[in-house]
Amino acid sequence: MAKFAVIKTGGKQYLVKEEDKIIVDRIEAKEKEKIDLDTLMIFSDDEKEFEMGNPLLGKKVIAEIVSQDKGEKIKILRFKAKVRYRKRKGFRPYLTTLKIIKI
Image (tube, rainbow, N blue to C red; front, top):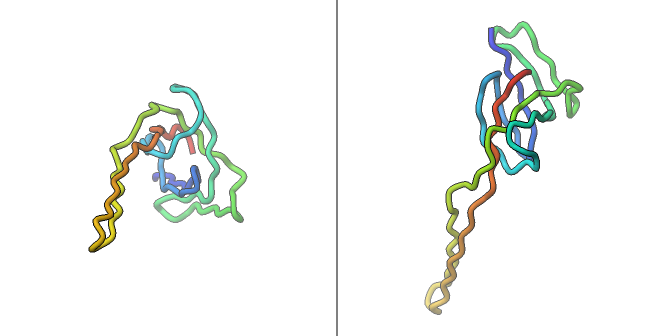
């Protein structure tokens, strides 16, 4: 029986279970530090346990920060037809890798 949780961080929601590693937007904390994540829902795969928050559940998911990295370069191209207008930009987003310890 596996427990799953829907967590919210960085304005996005992620479906996780224990021992999962996920990549999220930058969280300001040091590596090897444990953090609490907001939980929206907890359920099990055998459908016997189900808890849903309104909008948040009172329980927290504990995660450990594995690494702070930069992601792949994202390229942004803008152009207008027939007027020789072209612009190219790019940036690398800051990312955090989390390991889910306890739900």
